[in-house]
Length: 114
Length: 109
Picture (tube, rainbow over the protein chains, first blue to last red):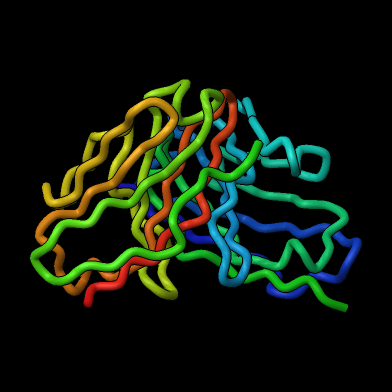
């Protein structure tokens, strides 16, 4: 069973790039899909995108122009970069492993504010 | 890509059954048998309850069941318990992407 842990800055300035890392333990990310999902305060979940260990990616069409997801199999980590952030990007960001989003990290709150 | 439609809230008494609906389109729910349901308690991460419309991961009680008809999916919780009070989110494959519903708050009376 995978254990996932998100990490990164809790505060990002508008127009800058949000960067988060998901560290995976209890198994290798090789062979797994790893996704990023976010949840704005008091709102529902929003799928951001996923990466397969082979490097193939798919992104939410509404975020595609600003999102990059990458994986470092040697460190068993997956990263999320979201550029040109605004207050609307304030949310709890989760990473999840497995094609069915079987395993979730605890989430990390990112606030976009100057 | 629009969010799937769920009722904002549902409620039921202990021991009763409740059903939560999730309505999409032929491009997501109706087009694929890849509908999942997640349970989320306040301040916690979501937990997978149902995948592939009606399959349960190991450890999820049989009280939770899923179904689909056309462009709509449903989650039924039978024998309602106090600990079932939580938010429930549906999710569907939409052709190289995934889309979630807005979430439903279940209150156990």
